Image (cartoon, rainbow, N blue to C red; front, side):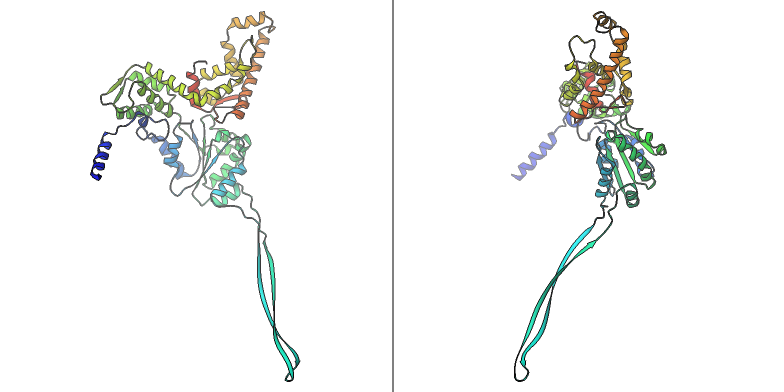
Length: 444
């Protein structure tokens, strides 16, 4: 029986094949198609050895930050404190967590009660000694207790306390989703960060590409002491390496046209490269290593893969997209334009780089006004909806402004996944995959 098991297991191992979903992975570490990014590796190592700058770890979701964090930041002997930011986070919460996780704690008032017992023995004689007397021992017990108070001062956990306690230790403080913090949180951290850096206490701020200069705005002294490490985007060569590693493993050939189309639609994002390749191969019947080389040479196959991915992403983004467009359902029939729809069109039309920098509502208005059909304008002037073009234009601008404001409020209340945020009248993209989704969504 044991011989049979050994033979059976050996044959099973020999016949096991690799699946396409194992090679082109959309979750976890893609061990078959992971590409080391030497320039990033070197800069991370310099960060640890120099200890003279905070590291801004910038990248969208699925851009590879987690892989690099595990591989290069989580070093043996380094005490890592991870603080997950949101728009309600406070500096006190951050500093208390740092103190707690590095076993600093706080000094508090202590009280102790102690008790004991003592026995006293004495002799008593009744009568006349040597004539008629009785002698006896009398025992008495006295119980007593005392209250011991040690008044010790409670220490305020602030930048001074942490710097004094941590300057000789190997600790790395990681702030996840740094771009979500309030301006008050950011202002205080910006002021304190210089002191932490002076004592070589390492900070990593993980955020999105649209948030790199927030700390600099609040403290010019930090200029030159913030190291930007941008994970978005992959270079063309890195994308080609991922594709080559995977297709070679699976015995699949992609034409140059197909590879270029993948590069074009992947937004140079590692997750999307993996996702497109996975569906491209599976749509062509390559679910595992091919015994005979599979050739894919029609670039339109990439388009089909992107559309399929968009359909799959409906589960993640359909409700969020509905929140952004919530005003559409509230529009009255016969309105001259739909301001919510105009914003959706803008998100689809604008390039990633523009959305990262932020698009002000006035720019959305200008873009939308330039693209409006002149006959629509004239129609609503003729039917007296608007007195003239100027009144139409002013109304257009005001409603775009309000729509931008409403999107920010609606997403904050109803969505757990941040895809956009609004700051000082600007819309910023915070999720690149959402941009891919709306690019391929049919009704925009």
